[in-house]
Image 1 (cartoon, rainbow, N blue to C red):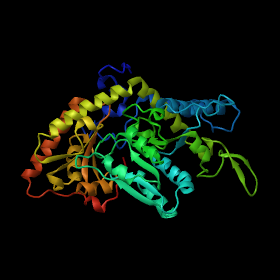
Image 2 (cartoon, rainbow, N blue to C red):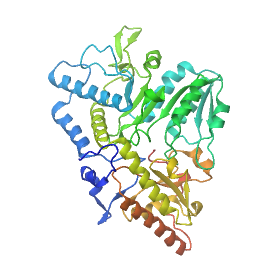
Image 3 (cartoon, helix red, strand yellow):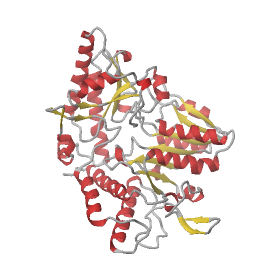
Image 4 (cartoon, rainbow, N blue to C red):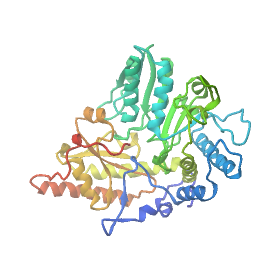
Length: 449
């Protein structure tokens, strides 16, 4: 891999050899064009190698052993935590007693962004949200940042309210101001919509929520892999994201929270590793982060996530952001030339590397579109994308979505645009589109994101 400076124009051809899967042929002899990155990204050889080397050379349980392998595993595991801390500029710990002590108490490893949100809802939420208290979400939230708050409200008698979106796919900040009041305990908001690609003004939302006395949880699953994030500058209270959306393994995610909040939160899960001392009838929990990492953690996935952070740092998040902007602009240009296609969400200048669309207002079903493109080697996503309230607001049941990453090329976007135009021509010639799959309402959404 040849790293670029942050100001350099990113050339995806420099990085594609690091991703073996991108050289695959599908359906026999069709080159793969992978445009499903909002669901999950691919892994470079460097991440795969870090995982393999850990299992072959360094694997042992962490936080318990004093033998050589255990100490090596500790250093790798806590080293990954430090890499994540530095990536988002969380505060380092100042009271470390040993080199294997956590480098930050503000980084909790979880199984993913969904688990991280549920941890906050169960631990912080159960302790701080009571009857009549309010949680503010938005109409564009993924189910992972909606359902846990509904469940919290059901348990506590709280109320969930939503910030609406405008017709062009932006948050209505005036409506946010009207929703915030002295009963608002938390604002839960996505940094980037996984459907619309909308980049939300997180710093401004945090400022307004804090002025009203509310905390803010940011769903960074679609933002952390694509743009630089500074939790200190944002003054974020909670931030969550997933490893598999940023070149890392599945089964690993991150909860960032301000240390004073974590110190005040009771443990969510009980078991080994989170106990400082125990008696038959009570226990004393460890300090964060171990307080929230009961049992054997996802050791190797965390180390793999650390390798993914190394890779992203070498490519440069600003370079990634600018490259994705060029890809989105090209996709908008091509799809905008097809009268039957309606692009969802704002203009490219206000969105990340996500382009969702419907064909003939959904009369050509998104699953038909995705299947048609798949036969041409182009992998996109179709469905409600785990955002049913948003789809209802848009007046549709499902949509097709292409999502880009730094290893995608403009030529691949051109192939995508040509294939969508071909879809329209094909089904226009057909009397009735065939449905090889049942409509989205009767199918479970297999994958989020």
